[in-house]
Image 1 (tube, rainbow, N blue to C red):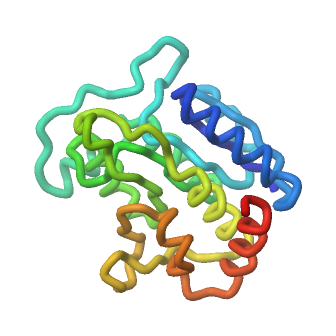
Image 2 (tube, rainbow, N blue to C red; image 1 turned 90 degrees about the horizontal axis):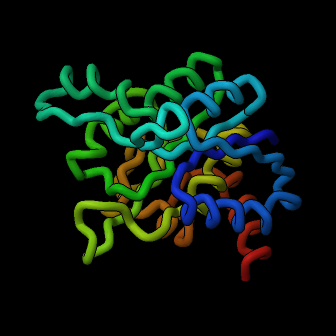
Length: 207
């Protein structure tokens, strides 16, 4: 399984690589990495599934964040969303008939992530997000749920579907959960035995 991981934050990237090192053999993963939209776009043809950050530069040395105007209403959100590098990449991946998952740490209820979150919901793309750190409410969380994102990518590649159970026990399409890693740990993610096989294999490696 050829997986592209897109991440520009050095700490988050190190966490992703650490996870991949532990599980790549068991899950048959061949992984390549990119940190810009330009690099990632050049690897779409190679990849079978993409796990992507939401905010990263279009080119080396560029800013990861577009200038964010005040947005209101679904039409404005959808119109602005492609200016976010992750959304621009995801649109290309979907157009190529491949799977894509967002892995971010900006908390999807925040204004910064709102256009990307709305776009993901309208296009059936899973967004794996985490709560912001209490001491850094305007920035990023210290870590991402790479385990949830990568395992979900494996699941989708094996024919799974985008559906989870949210924190209130309701089905959500696409999912709306505060922490997908927690949902995975309680095996609440999907009503599909294929996810159990993936989780059992994962926990046997990390326990």
